Length: 469
Ligand code: SF4
Image (cartoon, rainbow, N blue to C red; front, side, top):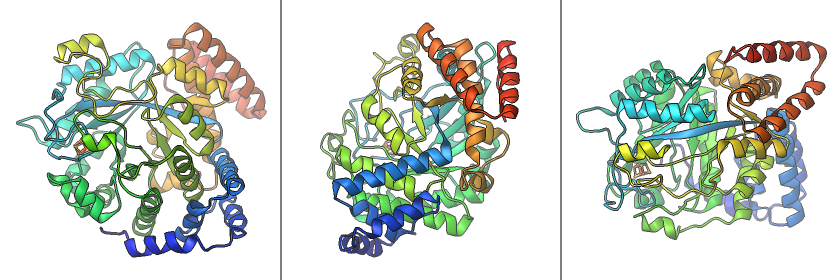
């Protein structure tokens, strides 16, 4: 597979076991100064087995997370617009051979209705997701751009979606230019596995069968001017240490060629998917302890890159991973096209919320419950999209993220968006928690920032929405 040196990764995994654990302190000191780690250093961390040393890794990861991002946690929700797919990935319910699920590609009015439902719950950031096949008579790019337009057009009161990130099939450069022009935030594409043989086994047919075409989609998106890119691996397909080093090799390639790493890294674990037998018994199941290590090592290795955790994981695991490096989480997700409201599901011919879903979920809490839980753990829930609005993307964002200077803006914007949530959507108990959190963080600001926040809060109370710094 392009950009991935399997031999080197395999050697690193073997060699790192011989490394004196005293080297750990040197590596952690470097990581805590917010410097990127080399592949060799990351490999050492992945191979550490001593429980006390693992705790050192975890506490260094917490330190780095706090230094870069502060206490804010960005919330988003996936919107599945279609489960049609031309590929046959063995782990996915949308695979083309699967006759057990109902197929559906949402129409523009349906996308609008789904978005309104999400807006009425308080969501402001959407990740648009779809299988890799357009409805008949349409090209992928035409379907994507009309869907994105429908999402941005939806409105509930004064609330609109602020940012649409997209997880869709790889495109050509000209199509990526159209995707960028439609106003997307991050373009996400997961390699799934960085191990060539495993990749070929898992993707027996369809356009996704070519691993180089998939990995090159990142380069094509960059060439088209999309500089916020999200990469990811599906954990459970192959050795977790290899996949982590594969992800980091991909990061190195991006940094070398485009001088900017990924905006986000996603680390989904395989979950049971209807009609996809492999998902019930993943070939390289990763334990909770190993998974925690993956998140912590990624946080230390690429401190400036957001780490995304979806509702595949259960509430307890998600809360815990926030302290180890996760900076963005999904909330209230449904993986069925048309699954967000019973009315709409019926209209769409789907029998219930989970019909036609991609995989099963581990966290079923509502957005309001998740906001409440974040506050209880002293994290500031954030619905901010300021960087994208102010063109703090790609290299510009990295220059602010690398020294940790983005966190002041993140905290301010998180508090402004939390105030909007409090006024428009929060339940009585969560409203109270939001109020107390804003008051508590207000006291920690310097006098100038206090004045700024007071001004924004006054604006929100007077009905103005969507302000940011
Ligand atoms: S993982 Fe993606 S490409 Fe593969 S079958 Fe599922 S939806 Fe299609």
